[in-house]
Amino acid sequence: MPSVSLLDFSFLFFESQQTPMHVIGLVVLDPPKEHKHHYAQDLYAALLQETKVSAPFNWRLQWSITGKPSWQQLKSVNLDDHLRITMLPSPGTEEQLQKVVGRIHGQTLDRSKPMWEVWIIGGLQDDKVALVLKIHHSMADGIKASSIFNRSCGLTPEESFNKPMWQFDLTKTAKERAQEKHLADLVTKAAIQATRQLSLIPSMFRLGSKLALKALNIADCDLKLPFTAPKTILNLSPKRSRAVSTGKFSFAQLNHIRSITGASVNDVLFAISDQALNRYLNDRAVPLRKPLVAMMPINLRKEGDGSKSNRMSIGHVELGKRDLTVLERLETIQRATVDLKNEALNISPDAYVNYSFLVNGVSLISGKFGLNSFVPPASNLLISNVPGQKATAYFMGAKVDAQYPVSLLMPGQTLNITFYSYAGMLHYSLVACNQSLPGFEDIGSYMQEALGDLEAEVMDVAIDAVGEQVSFHDEESLALEMAVVAARESLRPTDSAFDVIYQQKMQRVEELERQLAQLTAALENTIKLDPKLVAVNDEDVKKKVAKPRKQTKKKVELSA
Image 1: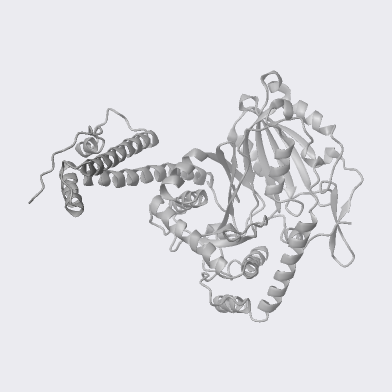
Image 2: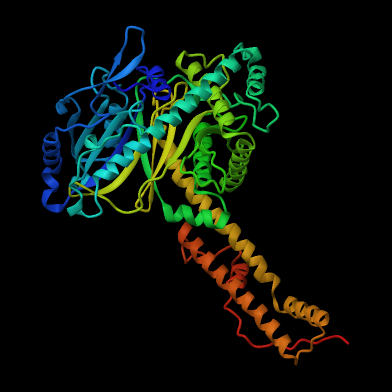
């Protein structure tokens, strides 16, 4: 009889009607033309025939007399209890689909049965069909859930008729069980040590945090003091209802910003999320006095570590201040994420896992028991980015048009933002308690606008930087520069070495001018300039985007 690990048990312990602990994958399918009108019904009928069920999809939770949970492996599973079909009034819109997914997400899974469901939603616009995979986090996390769906797919329609998700064995390997046991031993020992010194009295809470750090032998590190996030409407106890809002970004657009700024894609995502959240809160007269703090999964594996283990933990990143531009916000977050990982690596990964467990554990407990008014929040929300596959996939003959990650809300938090990459796009979902965050869908629109603003600001700064380089190499400056070089190298204009240096500098000027022209063209595409409009600084623009000079050697007069 499979046992329930400490990590899996935590998802059972913290679950309530207000905080369901399952994850959802939302997949949008584009069926082949000849099957579009009845694809949803045909898919439902075909999946009902796949009665073989593998672990853990045939596991049912049971409790011993002592209150210890374990998994009971069932000999058979009634698929009628787990496969559902519903139809939207055609043509169903994205908003209608999101409402249905929100209702599905707000319902806890029945613990008297294996805790998973697959929903087929038909009637979407253009005869598309949505597939919803819902599974309890104690059985599989979002990464595993997405991986088994991808294993059910193929790279061509002909290769896409594979086993359904519940026929893939997801039981943990011996290595995974050993890692979980190691983690359980670490956090149990740390909790015993820290609770001897940690006081949860509100007036002593920050002192208790310092004592907890000292108990873990990391008091001298530079980790920021926990439980200093601002109290906002993002830190209320969520109600039972759930709402979902989805969207997507072009990965090429994100990579373009990353390549120019040197920031990571994660930094860019955090910056546009932070900009959108600040705008949402400000619109609702909830201005922030200090920056938001986001939970972020971090990899504690050091550079050059050849091991395959990820050494993942949860860190807290302080985001940007209230009145920053989105580019300034990106710079702030980029520094914060680098500092966070460096600080975490200054101590042992095991010690940081202990620290993270204690801080997040206290936050979860305070959220579960409604102590938000007494315990300062350690963070305001969780933002995560899950890698997916790059190639376009097909499922049961239909093209996989989009994959959205629909994560859970932590106790004491009312918003989650999760990103998932697929086929050149970065899909995202906002999961919220819409009673606590009315009109939260605006955050998604604000994120789209923030990305456009960031790209325009980055391009503008890049053009100015290259333009300054071009201006620096005007004819007079170039003549003076060549005179200095000639004097230093004892060269005359008639020397061949002088001509080589001159040609190199001219090539550099032309390269800068080409870069400036490319950046300007990219900027025009980004902000969709009207060519009929005259720029205020039209003369400056004409000078910067001048045609490349001909490679004719300018006569340089040398002083005696």
